[in-house]
Image (tube, rainbow, N blue to C red):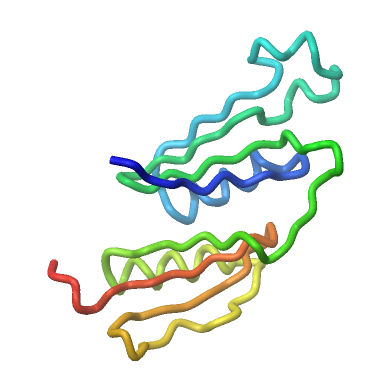
Length: 139
């Protein structure tokens, strides 16, 4: 099955962000530092604790991240949004509350014309999230 996953780039706080997402969403988090990789000898010593690659996995949810920023530097914008389809009303409410901690709810959770409970937020790392629970889905 082909799928697409979100890959987030951070500016030195990937470990903190991915641990935050794990505390919000649950799952298994794997972190690989630059110092633990074959790149260690080719990178400046101050980068040895930076995250080369991280993966948070929970069922079909896969969220990846890194501290490796391209030469122009990290530019945060609104061109990437993480869309999270939830499996219950309790789950969407829990995730929304946790992810919006120290962030901003841009669209409060509300019932929609398409039969879903839907909301949007920007988390404390300035990443944009849309959360959706299809109330018509069977349990």
